[in-house]
Image 1 (cartoon, one colour):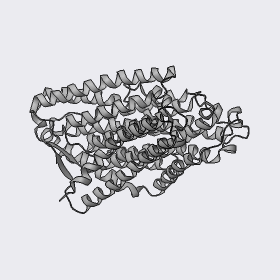
Image 2: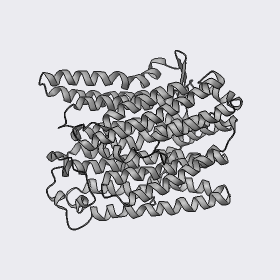
Image 3: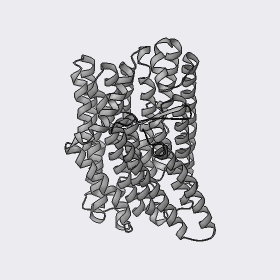
Image 4: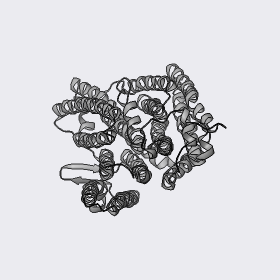
Length: 503
């Protein structure tokens, strides 16, 4: 029998810890007790460590033969392959971001609000991964959107931050409304939003099913930053605190992709060329993301636009999986979801550490530019190495994680032996090479002999910022030389996806 407290606790713990962190921090701050914020940071880290321990117990029980399913009221939650992948990446990156943010947010007002909202967003994403009901997945999706909105606008005294927040709020609200209308169409057709019921009855939906799935692709596609529904992304990523930029790029847009691909997978019996539609979106994302990144001079905006391209790689692999019943294609898409979370998390945290030492620690909210990076390795060698590893891995250089996940996707496309797919594989491969045109100059600037004025006047790097960067560097290299170490995650995820779609 499944241990219900352990199972429900994993979903509930971040939501229970969030108000405690906020209330305790506010009460002690009003009394002028500085030790209170130290305790709130400790509670936030401890809550995530406890959730990781619950994750371990639940995964051990599931692989030990115990049922990974549980009804909470009338709603089924299950630790399936897709939920396992999303939850694992979320907890790992969420913990590293929380640790990184301790020195990064130390001098900011309302620091306790930051940790409370971060915990809420992590709990919401776990809920997206676990729930087996379309409407409740939307509820968790909305909770994620609301909490991340306040995190995007955390620097609310900055006009650019407020502008980014308004763009994010308006487009996210429109996307959520469209997704809800899509769910309503499914409910009207079969009278249920339970995954298993939709899967069994989707063949009888007809036009309502097509309308529903189109609305959900567009609605969830806004959060997944599918072109042309991506315009909120560069401002939100660049204006948010760097830890939140890592979460937005590494987890939040990927949660949008998971919600979208879940919705599509339930409709296999409806028919339709949904896999080919995804491949079309993927090629558009890759091209637009690369072209827009090429012209950027601000580091975080460059990394944000590159996320469009990497979302394209994920969608390309998953599209191959659905269009050609390709296990390798789906596995490559899910594998790249994991590697992108780690690589882009590393890139934003390393860039955020440099932003902190060069600007934020002096009270300036100036953006980190490419010119600021000149010679950074001479004063901040660890962060220069971390950022270099991240961008080289994102560019697909061999021995790093990004190369292996891209290679699996391209190999799956070639295995289809379809002329159009072979052309698409060549297109995607050339775009991967093109991305080095904006990644390689970052490495060149970091290791220049001449240092920029910003580096020369930079402050000391807090040691706690180095811990998450070192962990992510090691993971990026380890996965690159041992890609099968993650097969449990992307293998189970693709089995869940294709079993639903093709059964």
